[in-house]
Image (cartoon, rainbow, N blue to C red; front, side, top):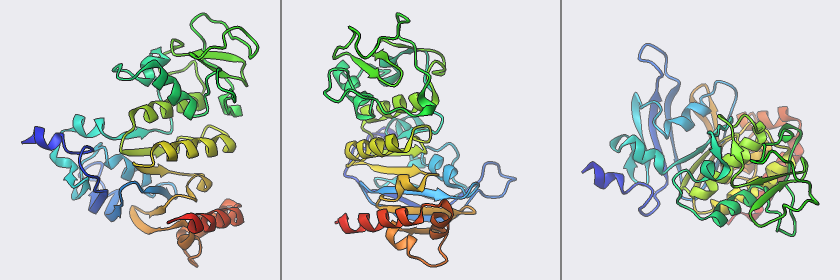
Length: 311
């Protein structure tokens, strides 16, 4: 019976996500971190998850993966209560890109595709889609911020320049660092020979390769510059256009053009609506966050533009 259920989540007709009166505690003697949280996310919807520090947004995101089971209430994905199926089966069909992406010792290819389920070209393509472009591309550039300034080390220990002889379809060039990354480039334990920004780009490439129907991003572009963030977000939305995407965001500009924004406050849902409606709500929590960001006019403009282009 459980095996039959296990094969259903993520493989049947998309039914979205329903969270019903969710109460979650990290320990029985502690106060609830989430208190009666309820909402519904439609199939393929892109939702920004925002809130002040300690509001419960990260705990809510982790609850989809059952790091802690509900004290009360339930989470339903594609019509299935996630507590009725095995953890391994559940997590194999969901993808999370954490804020501090961690890689494991091995090659870039092994980090992208540990079970060897994809071709080399598919792995390279996933790198290109997060702005790590192959050197054979007409626009062979990699967007890299100051935080992504420390390169990984190729297997031969050489940093090939842009004009070097290593420009092949099997390599990716970080032009800001004038180095070549191949699928055979070695990654140290934890990915410590790469900067935090580079680790996040590789983790996002891995997520693109998996093509999950449900993806959670925990401020995964926090270590890249804003211009790179825009390009990565565009790529992710295109690649996951048929998936539910939930992004925990501290940069409001990252999610201002999402379908809806879920605002958490003190473990409860404070607001859940389109960016345009939320930013126009006087005395609203989201509007207050936008005002304090210093980018209110730009955020308002982006929210209005999203409303015009939404179907």
